[in-house]
Image 1 (cartoon, rainbow, N blue to C red):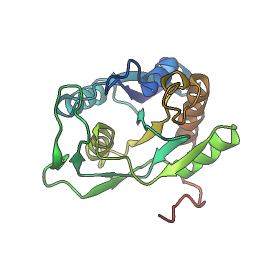
Image 2: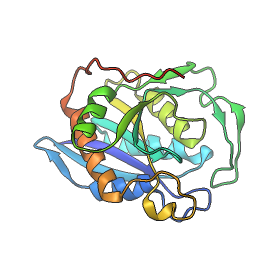
Image 3: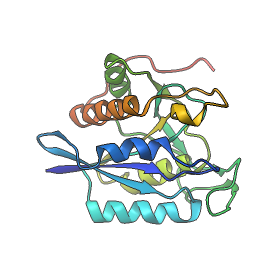
Image 4: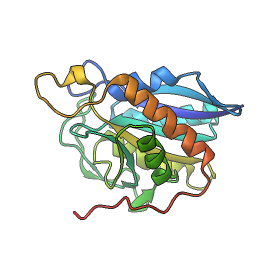
Length: 213
């Protein structure tokens, strides 16, 4: 039995819950295929500690695939990230109060890493399941991007495929603000479809997923 490591973040910025963790925890222990089981783990929203936590999980679990997820405030669909950049530039402090500005994720590391997941096939499959999805061209410059970059950096020469997915708020989080949201059950179904598609797809589909601006 192979393992896919699926991570979500702890709450941050005064939120009481983080939809990325609320969704992935529902898939912990789920067998998605005859040869694939999900292991879900929570990551800290902290620049100083999240890398060590991620490395420890990879060393401990030896996953065949890793998909990290995080909250994308303002996003209305499940967003499959294309690229991680070697920049930390925090608009708000993390959960330990750190707020790095224009620092590298990895000193002397490459400017960017691309996902090694078949993100267009994943978007297509999630849409065909009736759930909103799109390719995203930026994972931001907060801890989500840091995790994405560190993940790709750690696995760059291993052959283990990996990437990052952003999810919207849950409806109960945006009653006052009115920002876009997605029901938890829908998030869980979308991630389930996405992970299985990633596992079963060796070559990505050639479909448009770009943006004009």
